[in-house]
Image (cartoon, rainbow, N blue to C red; front, side, top):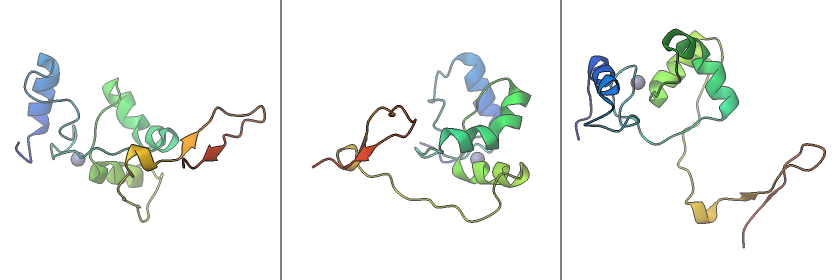
Length: 109
Ligand SMILES: [Zn+2]
């Protein structure tokens, strides 16, 4: 799999229904390979709101483009923590929020 495509190629793939690549394989802004990653919903919305408004949809971007947008949007202009996600069997489990809205987290044995 190539490491770089053009944003125009990504747009063409979108228009054709993604016949050759998965929509999350490449950053829709720079065309670079996009690893599996995530930001929490609040941060994602704060950083990508303008982009989503311009395009009419939520896009897919790489961590580098996300950090650049965060700086441009005035959301975050500092250091980012980029760490591997633990395998699912080592992640804490989260239960439904209690009446006071607080979620409880427990470690699985
Ligand atoms: Zn990018």
